[in-house]
Length: 233
Image (cartoon, helix red, strand yellow):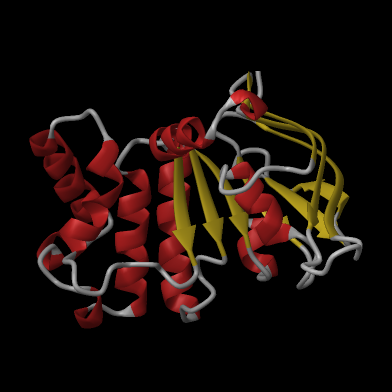
């Protein structure tokens, strides 16, 4: 069974003007992502990549079609149900890091655990282990302003992994990083993937995209191409 299965997914954004047609951003998207698979999404600006990522991440609902997450039709979930599923099974990593400026690295990593049933002491231990795993054991008390861009992205990765999600969604995670730091971050992505977590990564960088097991290309809101690059990546 696929972890993510999209069937005929479409998304129309309202025009904001009465009687004006909406803007169709995604059209008839059929896509399956297996548990533990590493997929990259590519396409020109405006092709629908980020919208598709938001739909996969349960941050928005499709206008048409069906979305099954681990066999569950998400259309039957209310907003609280979507939030709970998202919090426990999906981790997010963004280009601009989205760290809280006044919180330490450790506090930022602990954020997804606010609504967890896991004891806080256990979450704190896991957060410390994750920061050590991403090479920031000596930066746990540093706030984002004292960290480099690469270090901030490492904090964001640790935060995304706190609740041991089945799926990591990353939107241009190396977009603000230099080439050396980008390679270091991608090495961490591969470590996460080898540990069994599925990854969907949006990128404009051909080299970054080619590191995934499969490349999905979008054009004008439609799936234009699927390329299997590295089956054993």
